[in-house]
Amino acid sequence: MRHIKYTEQAFFKFLTGFACYSVIGILCLIISIIFIKGVGSLSWEMISQAPKGGYYYGGDGGVLNAILGSLYVAGGAVLIAIVLGAPAALFINSFLFRYKRLQNIIRYFLDALWGIPSIVYGAFGFTIMLYFGMNASLLAGIITVACLITPIMIRSFDEVLSTIPTGLHEAALSLGSTRTELAFKVIFKQGLPGFVTAILLAFGRGIGDAASVLFTAGYTDQLPSGLHEPAATLPLAIFFQLSSPIPEVRGRAYSAAAILTCIILAITLISRLLVNKYSKNNLK
Amino acid sequence: MYNNENVILNQCPNTGKDSLNAISIRDLNVFADKTQILKSLNIDIPKHKITVILGPSGCGKTTLLKSMNRLTDLYKALEVSGQICIHGEDILLSHKDMSALRQKTGLLSQKPYPLPVSLYKNITYGPKLKGIKNKKILDKIVTRQLKEVGLWEEVKDRLNASPDCLSIGQQQRLCLARGLAVKPSIILADEPTSALDPTSSQIIEKQFMKIKKTYTIVLVTHVVRQAMRLADYVVFMHNGEIIETGGVEIFKNPKTDQMKEYLINGN
Image (cartoon, rainbow over all chains, first blue to last red; front, side, top):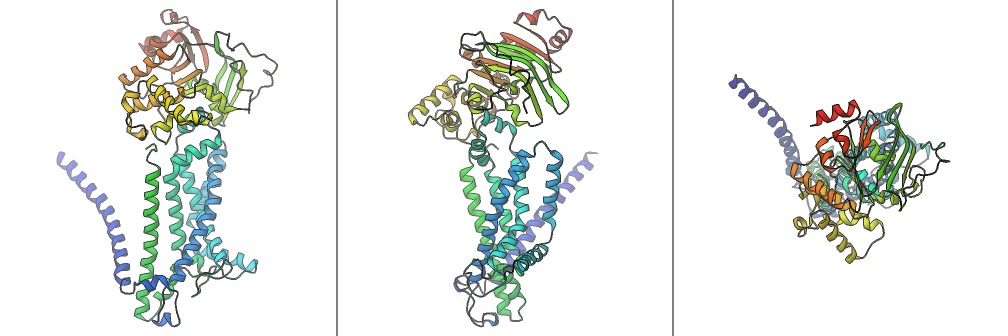
């Protein structure tokens, strides 16, 4: 009997451990392939210059246009999503408190929006763009990506807010805080790590998405120069270079992917460090 | 939300400075959707005494306590009607300054909820909201309040640390100190020792005995022994109704069967 229990435990320990380590392993494999294949073409020129003539046939230049374009598109979309998402999450959480049914229906819809493929958002953005007679531009890209990530942002903010205990609300109110003071001095502070995670999640999704910017932001070899001009993005830069028959250009696609990965890693790391610094007094 | 049509004409019972009572409650009804949680309660809570609200879980003790500083507002499904007078003012009527009202009534909840700031800032949070900005005065308040709850010696070297580094008993005393720092006249305590070990509970109980000269304390508990140790005045509740009220003598001579049964089970 004891023997069976022991074997059973060992089996499940192996199973859970295997699942965990294999995921980490696959992730490491992906990242190392990107870096190994990309390191050959990785250079200062790559991140400091826009493509020059003949770049896509192996000529000089870099992908600065796409780096900047991606940062602008994702950054702008994240800003819009925060401005729309934070009040929306507050509304769902506090004002719809009494209307559980409506609250659940809204949450259900937002969850469904997560699952819609981003090419659909791209097509939607394209239709709207045509309706207003706009060309493919940075602005159209930002708006489309904002549509894609706002539901993610609202639901993540909403989850963070709902984990803050009512006792903490009561404690702050009974010390004489107004609702505004409660929101800014207590809830914002307590929820900060969660809010930052939500923003990162949305930023990651936004900066890594190719399909939604394909028709809307367009692509150009110029550095982004205005909201109404087209802008290049890293996922599209990877896509175009990877489909090239020239091996050197394909190598550059991998180094563009490495740059994208590094941007995400750096932003995650910096924000984590900041959060740890500012939330050391939080209730665990 | 507050249905006060029938009480607007009624005068507030005297709960002012010269009165013996700190809080007067008249015909208080609380509904959650269609369930009635509190059924037309009438209580007078004496000043500078410990009033214990005793009763089994789910009898409405906490709801009664939370309606005394309008934390019932947080639960939008609750409908409160009737009259609760504190300092000669019906708090269910006045919609004007909830912050000032709540600063008159400090709250100590079942579990300690320190604010997500340092120990020092936990204590100064309330005074700062009142507009006290002078660092020296704030320092004094922190020292005085921590000494008052017997926490000073334990934390004086780490006032900038996170409340997370305190034990749960210390956190509860921190919450008491934080509540006292806004100089309330009434302390509402909702089973404040239920999450604590016996030693920490005893410290909190001793604090209550010590501070009752200057504060009116309303203590909600389901522990009969604690009620017997602390109470000056007892309110026994059952199913949202007040069954019996009186001084400590009602522990010896309970008049109702429900109270008799509860005391037997509790001992």
